[in-house]
Image 1: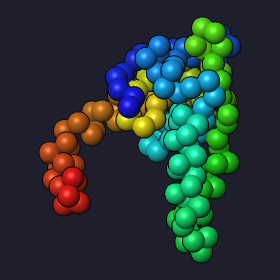
Image 2 (image 1 turned 135 degrees about the vertical axis):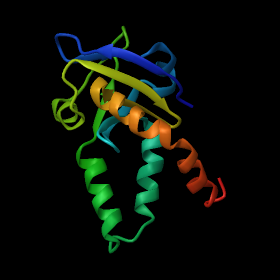
Image 3 (image 1 turned 90 degrees about the horizontal axis):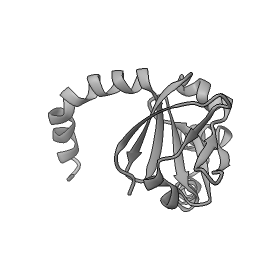
Image 4 (image 1 turned 180 degrees about the vertical axis):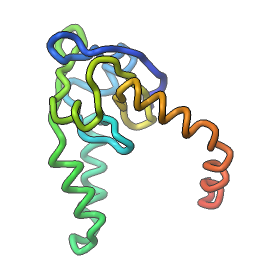
Length: 143
């Protein structure tokens, strides 16, 4: 499980340092792809394969499944860290997430998300006040 929030910035080579607590859980090779709500998602290899298998189980005639599969996989990149725990964030993912310099790395249970600092601040400001309503909607789904 990935937990916590870390504030970082891109270095001169567009790299970030993965927080120490996430490094072992991500593993030596992991996947970066477009995340929901304009962020970058990092998945341990096993978890990405599980997500892919779930998509494989859906019929290709189902348009939302095709769409999600196309976006998830076409934007994905295999990633690895150097000995200092740094990774180079692909330019196309940085652009999709609006990351220029300042960023926030969060633990999101089964994945790590990387947000532009500005987008994360806006997301928290909009979403946190809605938690009671969100929990009420989830309780309707037996959460």
